Amino acid sequence: MSKSLYFLLILMYVGMNPMRSSAQQPLKPKYVLAIHGGAGTILKENMTDSLEQAYIEKLTESLQAGYDQIKQGKSSLDAIEAAIHVMEDSPLFNAGKGAVFTNQGKNELDAAIMDGSNLKAGAVAGITTIKNPISAARAVMDKSEHVMMVGRGAEEFAANNGLEVVDPRYFWTKQRWEGLQRALERDAERAELDHDDKKAFLPPYKDEKFGTVGCVALDQHGNLAAGTSTGGMTNKKFGRVGDSPIIGAGTYANNATVAISCTGWGEYYIRTVAAYNVSSKIQNAKMGVREASQAVIQEIEQLGGDGGMIAIDRNGEVAMPFNTQGMYRGKVTADGKITVEIYK
Figure 1 (cartoon, rainbow, N blue to C red):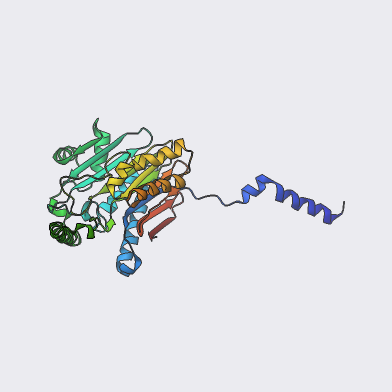
Figure 2: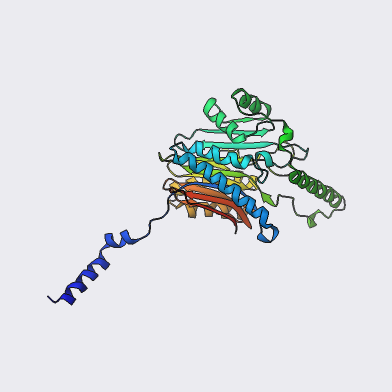
């Protein structure tokens, strides 16, 4: 056999060997944590350079805080709590310090957390004095036999379990207060149009940006978890509660499938049981996490709702679908590489 024919046969063997070919394929990055800081009308032309940088820095700080927990071998629940604390403590997001105002000029906070390893969950709604609602939700999960607590009872329970209590004035920010005033002016305009029977010309009021924050994580033990925290919707009335603290609607985690945190017009996420819907599509329809989460966002859109979600499956694959102009979002791989995005 000539040398040229020998080398030709070697090249043909290497090219046809499937094991060799697959080894040459780049491996998909394994993600361990993803966050969102709200979705909505988020346009670059409306964003100053300094504000954009502020969001990037805070999202990066949140991802790093959560990743540090994962890297140290802590649980996905610890990672979620650490990541969400960063966003709850920032006035940039509609959660904790940056919560929007109700029609009565109050800040009412909701949060939920879920452990994918055992399906335990905790949630709080309508609280006004607990600095970090996500920790209150975790206290409900870890230190009670319940899943959800609301209002003063939830505040008393959280305080009794050592969580930081603040004066409600802690949550006041100028930007959110001015947002309420604009909403109240719009209400007055609506009342005038209703009197003139011209209400069809005024679309229903909704927030231009849903600043709800959330986190999903996969720890070194293979356990998934999800958490969500929000101040609700500007000018909300009558004790309205959205999807964020409702397990299966705005928050869900199951080691067999996926961890989900949602942000958007909550009524639509409740009606479609959005977070659980993604898990169901993965388990029953055998969809991948990207296909399943995108399908649920499309269902919400068909009903007239908007927003987005973040998802991480048991293999560390991340999906971040949304149907708005933007969504504050980010993710970090197992080796610590952080990616942050804002616009569509």
